[in-house]
Amino acid sequence: MIRRAFAFSALQRYTELAIQVGSMVVLARLIAPDEFGVFVAGAAVLTLAWTIGDFGQQDFLIQQREPTRERRAVALGLSLAASAACALAIVGALLLLPEAAVDPRLRAVLLVLMIALLARPFTIAITALLQREMRFAPVFAIGVL
Image (cartoon, rainbow, N blue to C red; front, side, top):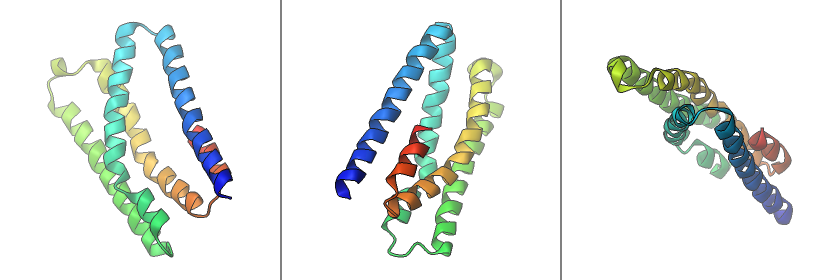
């Protein structure tokens, strides 16, 4: 069981990495260098916001002896609140900063990426509960998708 879990975990991590690298290579060839830079800047902001928005929810749910409905709801609520706060901070900064300070293309990219930021807490909760139940095949599928 542990070997299978380890294999799925390693396969997921390296498959995700390969997809990310491959996507970046394809994207870099399809769009102009300055547009690629805008996308990478937006992705960096999103990654930072995801890290803050995670709020330890996944580790909390995995480590619970019994993840009751109330505990799951609290973890999801905290993660949603942290993600919403990050999204509001980013949108607020975009609204308050002068237009010359932020490239209009980056503004558009960040606004679209805020949707992904607000959806992330739901995938974290589902993945954590599947990991807790040692159901690594669905975790692999979710991670790769």
